[in-house]
Image (tube, rainbow, N blue to C red; front, side):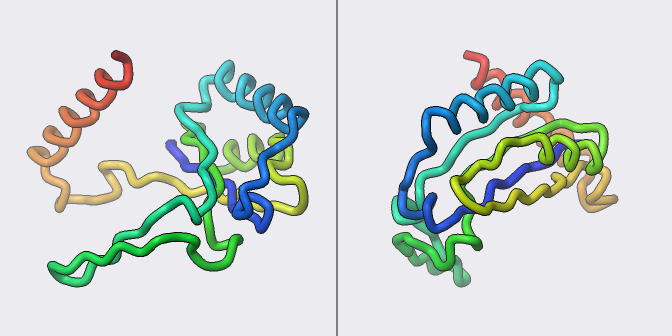
Length: 143
């Protein structure tokens, strides 16, 4: 199963405080374990929401909102995309993770929807189009 592992932001990450050299090394070692185990598919840290924008949709109208956005613990500071056997396996990996922040922090695990979750509304034709699009994205990432 594929999951997104979400590192929740903190006041420090939203202020743009970067990890120490030791923190980078510890997280790098953890990422190496994930890659060796075939778990990690992608991952990155995100700049504070003050560097971001949101686009709000209302019918055909679009409004651009500059960051920062709300309380730090409601924001995302980073993420991984993992392929794991189960949610329990994802939890086990997260428990091994070094603390991603200087102080208290939280990591959220969310499963991705898979084609079978959508039932008959995701027709074979739509699935084929999606498969072609994913193959194209994969090819672009390799080049």
